[in-house]
Length: 505
Image (cartoon, rainbow, N blue to C red):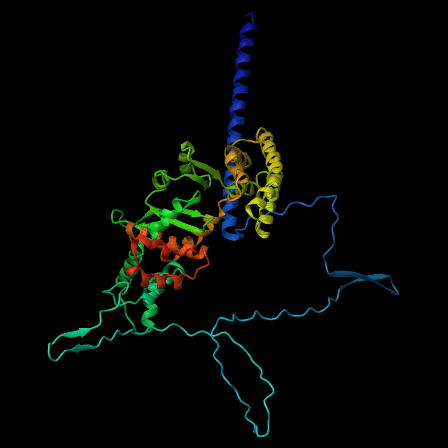
């Protein structure tokens, strides 16, 4: 009989067992990766559904404390009526509503006093002989008289001296574009229509045609471009003032641009937004790329606070000792809001911390606190931030790093110091929302006019958006400001150009 080599069998079994364990570990690793990928794709699907079908509001309603009593708000009461019957006793359910006391209607809002009143007197048709007026009934309605095109004629009589034959004629008044048939009011309306009301130029042309006035599309484009270049010195003055402040918000948004080197397609350009939320000034700078060179070139000599979102291009300023980089709490909060489908318990806990922090900011805003009062009020945020920080460091070890909740925690911890800086200075904001509100009209505009005609046109767009956004921040009527500026700027001293900026003096 052949002897059995038990040692060889043992070694062979050991090798098979090790290979099996390695295979199981590899399989487990593959399963974990697939699970993470599934969760990531599920998160993307949830975000897409929310973008298409749901409200954009990131509202968080904390769960009710089980020890807290609930006051029923249902106005319906259930009344059970027992009715006798020969065969059996039946119970019919009747729903009755609680009667509410009638409320006085608040009435319509009063029409503003500054509006012109045009009276139409309606006298009774009956014979008024022997009657005395004792009062009147007044009914007001809001009406509009649509804008009409008209021709403004400048008539300059010419005179001649019959003896010397000298001719006398008054000089022509200065106009924004001397060789252009469009007046200051029309140029203003074109720019407001396009950049405030987001109407493409071709639609404005069609509107003019309905009035019997045919103006070539390219001619109208030229009018707008020349008008913007006329106010370029104002843009440069605004840029100087924004960059001289010590606190700026920064953000960026895309703008498609026609490029002669890209036939059949457009170039993806970027409008970089910079906002001084203390002095209410906005600045837009067009750049062909979204790279870090764009903000660096503009802010290389800047000194002060710079508040940004989590975009990596701004990290170049971490090495600049003259710039204090602070981050946006709203962006951090959004990470946890989006992770609710992945880990509802941890996300809810984090969102509750954010809600406490924003409750303090809401009090500051509603009560319009002074800087000294803001410092005192924000002391309440420090223990909340400390507890939140400690909670995240503990939970980070309990979650998968690549999961949505893990990424939300990592994102926040990596930027923690920059997120907390706002508590050290009362002029600072908790988030970057002020600049995001300023770029929101751009997103509406590009859905209508789709793209800029060239890189030069994109920069002109940035210039006008800067001045119009500053008007909005200062509650200045953009139409009135722009028209008066177009009239005044041809003769205004360049060394006093700042006087024309739409900033409250």
